[in-house]
Picture 1 (cartoon, rainbow, N blue to C red):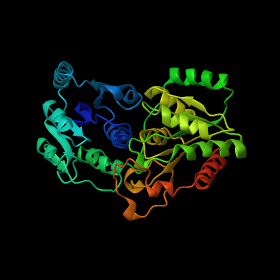
Picture 2 (picture 1 turned 180 degrees about the horizontal axis):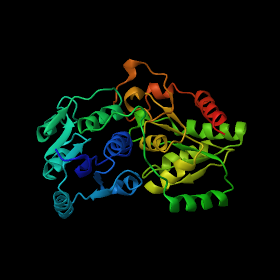
Picture 3 (picture 1 turned 120 degrees about the vertical axis):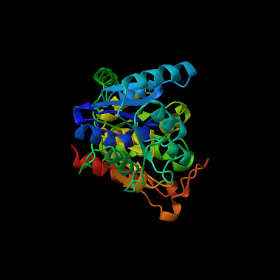
Picture 4 (picture 1 turned 180 degrees about the vertical axis):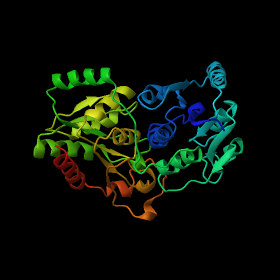
Length: 336
């Protein structure tokens, strides 16, 4: 095995936003245990601008889905001669990347834990993870690669300076100082909170605390965000549709974020922003904010379905506006 200063690691985690954030503690553990090693991260091109904000990574390798992109990326991986590739994704495509990188050590989840069980055949070392949370399970792969398990999870992200400066100007023009953010999207509706309730929350925060709210609208969420704005009267939230780096700046400057189990929630938590996380059909013990956050969930274990529904789930509808408002007030009161 190479000496610690001769090690070179390839992190394979192609997406998505929440999963990338839950991989950060494992990447931080690798860097802490191998400070002189080369540490690269291959990620889908759409996420690469965000992964470039990870302070402990030497090189971010954007992966393009086209055949020319695959070939060019693969040739670059093989030229680096990695000593170890760690696949945190557990899919055939990610396991194949680890295998084709040429790394003699290829570490991934045991077939009973990989998202696509057959992918485990492409690893040289298959790990049965410990812990219940996805971030803890990811740490098991880093430990298998030789890292020490940290006592406290670290998420080494920096804020993008240019985007922070531009955002401050936008906020100043809108007369906004301290602010909260709500992010009403979430992929599947069954794990979302209704936009009318987010709007009512905006109104309550303005009435009780004179706190303005910024509404984050991701791609395709414009109508959803519009419903939040309409329900927020007499409050006047600011609607933004930021890029990934702009979203990092927005969440990094916010006093608090309110969101369901979505990518923006996990990005805000990784940046150290206080979060009020709304959970229903997904399990916060497995998917909750890292390293910390306030979790609201009125559901029981039998409501942990992970089912992708087109209707709001009873577990999410059980969360009332007053309950969420009180949680936000508590966050704002303890963090001046």
